[in-house]
Image 1 (cartoon, rainbow, N blue to C red):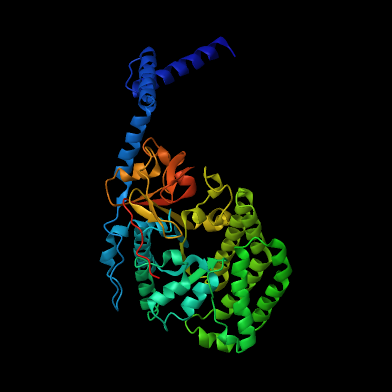
Image 2: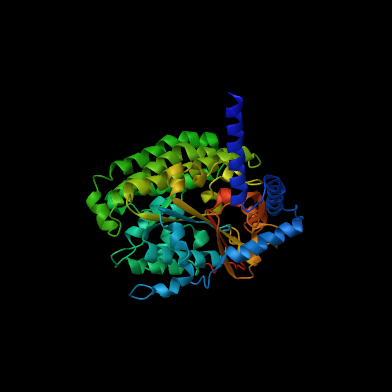
Length: 471
């Protein structure tokens, strides 16, 4: 390049720089340098904040939670009339509509099966989800055959009997009964709330066998049902292995009659249009239970202090529950939206990562990713009061640990606090969602989990009480 051309390039660069600095409001290039440095320093000061103490962090979390949480006005189920419940009764739940807009399954959890207020709150949520958002199938952590039986005869019996037929006894209470009264009322509408179960565990008799029109086979069926329960709680593994083939053979004989007795089944269960498929599935589950699960249970009974054996029974059960839930969603109700009622442990998205809990993958974690994408997992917790174990014995809820899920959410000083986790980005005030926090299962057993990895939302009941059980 010639000297003349060099001078022209330098002159062009000088003009460009002068134009830039003039446009920026700076009189010359030398003045622009400190101005830029000052601006960068200011931005860095605004972005980089000093580290907080634990107490300061907790206060930030609580302040953010108070600004972003929702307070429910009530957990009492709405009164049922011949008409729909007025939509105005659900105004405090309106925030759920955009959150659940594209969700096919809403999982309603609970940290204890023995909290009256959990059953009340979930019943009201179900009323809202069914009436306002078109969730027409309610699937319980209870026997598939038992819920099938209850749905099939829901129009022929009382709501209380339907409750007892459908779900495990841990939920037979005055607080759960309004749910079944509501379900019974909806059967005469154009969008009935359909009852279903996805558990594979035995839960008492799910059919009396009269539809078989074979008294001898019906009697054999009833006997093996009782035998299977006895074996499950026993320790005689060799004795069961010897008896198992004859037990399975009875179930196979009953299953072989299902298609042949379609007319009789539909007459016995008039309110369950899918009775044939459901009966076949339930009996197939019984055969699987007899063939695999009972032996696992006996082995666990023989070595009650061997957690690995107990974990195997849990994994087996939850794998079966997951498969049953998918089967219901794909084969029985492929176009319907579901509500699932279960313990927090079964619905969490990464149960195996919860510290000081069962280190196994349970139903929620086992779900295919596509189902997780279109589901919403709501965990229910309690901050004080009294709950009950599965034997219906009272348990005093321990005070929240400082910085725990219960402690942070109870800072709202509201009786019922809901917060969405799914639609949040990690920021200074909500970082508690993205790091391990303590919480209580059953109100007393301490766990450590990352809330947002496990749940899409949380509902805290400030004070709970033991259910009013129905015998």
